[in-house]
Length: 235
Image 1 (cartoon, rainbow, N blue to C red):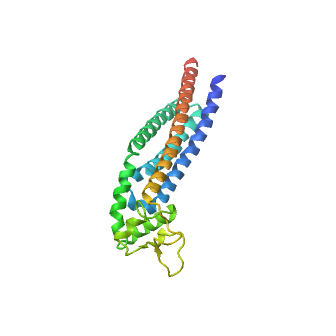
Image 2 (spheres, one colour; image 1 turned 90 degrees about the vertical axis):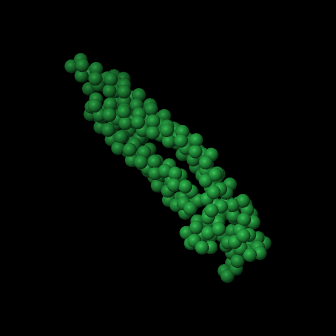
Image 3 (tube, one colour; image 1 turned 30 degrees about the horizontal axis):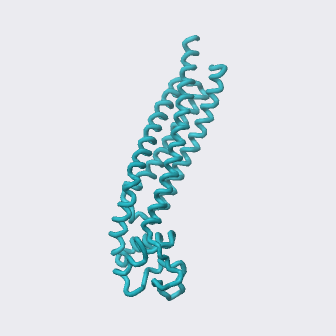
């Protein structure tokens, strides 16, 4: 059994693993929430965009399982389990770092993706119910209208008529038009882009913070494993 300062490291490692288990659950929850939140906007996004929340869920499950090795290894002072925990934690650290770098590099692609998708789906608004629902949800949630403004609907609607979702409030049996008091004049492109980028920054910051905590956990694990090995050699 380890003694002195290493006993403190042992219990700190156990505490870190409890934190890892909680962060794993948080990763799973956040990834699931993002998938659900942007499901209505799936027509405006490429498949690669949804790879990030799926990766978060996968990392969360892995972190939760890895924390099990760390907890068991710390409590039982099992050298092999602690080494396995350290290696897996390093792999997770590398995976999160790589995902963060890729996300940072791809952030400039969000604007291009949204511009292309919005332009391609707008002409299908009246003929495709799923696309119509996506546009209505987006315009209602962000209080916006069209891509760059309400005038973008001129090719689909006669005169000044607009989709009802372009107005904050529409009375029963009435239509939304550009002269309505409650019409949204701002376009959806910049609002959706800002919402995606803001959440990406928050998730990136959280991911980096957790990765640094994991690195500290690796250091503690290595110190504990070294101490346990010395105990075995002196027996």
